[in-house]
Image 1 (spheres, helix red, strand yellow):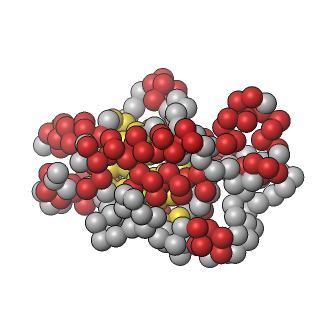
Image 2: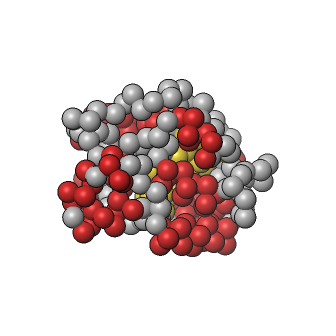
Length: 258
């Protein structure tokens, strides 16, 4: 499968990225929260992990990304440092049959900016960093340099505005990365905010945003093409599409600018 550089000659590939957004597989708090929303306040759901169904969803998505050729194009996997996301990232993009990565697998990096909404609910609280490193030694935790979860507030839930601001910081960080094709494994609300942010800064009809930004299912993958067209006097653009349509979308855009 061709890389972006192979598909689009210099300098076009320097101004584009493809993001593959993945929600974690079903976790215990999803099950308990569906039964009773008050259960999400239970300390028994601390850093909720994947259920047996969630593990099956991860295995299914892994098969799909290998069969489509997507696995071979991924240069970086960015994951929330919560267990359910790291289990999903490792299961989908790590080396099959081993809890590790190799030179043939993409780097997996934990980033606090893409974790779930902060505060109050124990299911969304991060483990101590030493515990995370012990359980997932193949993940790069260099972006998480604090042992305890100092972002956590037991009394106050992160506001939608604060979450939106955090997502903006995440996207700016991702845009500055050298990798061109990146997976972000995160949480439903965070992924919705990523799409809202991108589409708000594109030429999409705003009336389409609610439909395009609908809630992600567990282990659902959606692909987004991002183009920085500021060099030709236009704002950064984003297109939501299936992975196999990303190349066609880029070709259509390239044609429209020439």
